[in-house]
Amino acid sequence: TVKEVLQEIVPERRALLAELKKEHGSKGLGQVTVDQVIGGGRGIKYMLWDPSVLDSEEGIRFWGRSIPECQEVLPTAPGGTEMLPEAMFWYLLTGRVPSEAESKQFQEELVERSELPTYVEKVLDSLPQTLHPMTQFVIGVAALNHDSKFAAQYTQGMKKADYWIPALEDSLDCVAKSFTIAARIYNNKYRNGQQGVPAIDKSKDLSFNFANQIGFGESEGFVELIRLYNALHTDHEGGNVSAHTAHLVGSALSDPFLSYSAALGGLAGPLHGLANQEVLRFIIGMQKELGDHASEDKIVEFIWKTLNSGQVIPGYGHAVLRKPDPRFMALQQFGVRRKEVAEDPIFKYVDQLYKVAPGVLTEHGKTKNPFPNVDAASGSLLYHYGLKHFEFYTVTFGTSRSMGALAQYVHDRILGLPIERPKSLSVRRPPSASSSRTRLTPLSRRFGASDGGPQEARCLIWSASVSSARSSTAPSCLAPSESKSRRRRRFLVRS
Image (cartoon, rainbow, N blue to C red; front, side, top):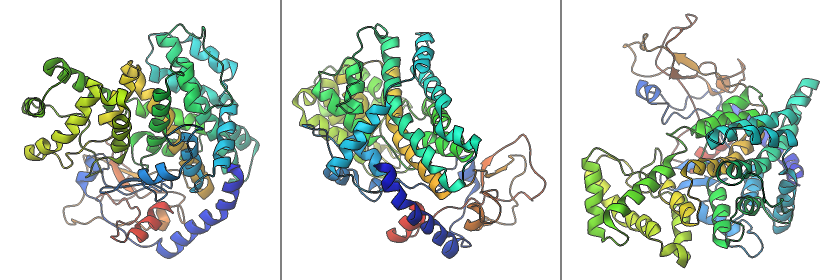
């Protein structure tokens, strides 16, 4: 079982953290500028995150493997072509590729956990049909806290070294039940409630059951898309709003249900989880203006018209990436391989934009990354197969992201990481002009070796109050090294 594999890994992970603190804890690894603090912490390396590392040139790597490499080694469903999200979840939790037998057993365990308690069903069914689906999702996941094993055992008293065990139990429950919650929300909001909804098929995977319960079970293409979509969106480092929120709330030892419910609130924000909807609206608008079969020259004209009006091309550019997002490439290739998708005018525009938009954006000169991100393709594929309720797209994102966020939640408890508590600065008390360099805080202190948490990491603006115990200096938030040596960087980032 996944628990048995993790039990083997726990001593190794704890030893690795101890070695990191012993060998590197007092070393300064970088500096932080005021611009970074004002700019939302962009580029500040400040937290540990195990399952994935985002490289600006290579894109996301899960435990060192690229997306194409994961597609090669992770098991698929019987007769399927796309890697199973359950296999990816196992991989994120353990760092080990599951065998076919392990993947099957894990799939069966998760689907067994996917049934909802009656009280959660009643809560969801009582919500107004007009309530945004993400608000319903937040409520449904938070309500599962009623049965939290972590919360119950913490209240009863347990050893800190054992926190990870009930954390794992809750995390598996949360991931499995989130798919069923999402399906129930869809049926209540867009269909006839629970009338005629098929029961969970215990012989199938989570993605199939989700698709089947919302009326798409007979569409082989949609089921395979949802499998790929969920596997690709599981994790994208720890600094994005939803992942960081789950980590932050979890650092207070809130249980996985409360932690991920909070993360969903962040995902619901228009700057985080709405991007693929904006891309789809842009493409549909382009289709209305240019028709179903526009030439590349016409598309280039449309792009320039959009840019010259002060708007952006949604789905292009990324905060970190400087190459095409490999998640986009996986989805784009999925569409190209399937004739019914490749001939869809909406998807054709996705493909044509990929060919011409980077050149226009480079010539325009106002973006560091003119290449497509994952949102440039995901919405058009969901739309093609008939999932046309835009506001629900973020819910599908949320079912996927639960796997990465909660895999790290388990690792946080394995490592015994302290509560997160960075130092805030007031905009009314700027840093001293006498020093252009930041004061570096020892890594060992940030990780709790001497003061219980990252108390000195200065990385956000807070105007309401300022502690006078310490003088106000430039931000000094530390994190794993940006060494050119990939091996060294991975050791520091992933340990």
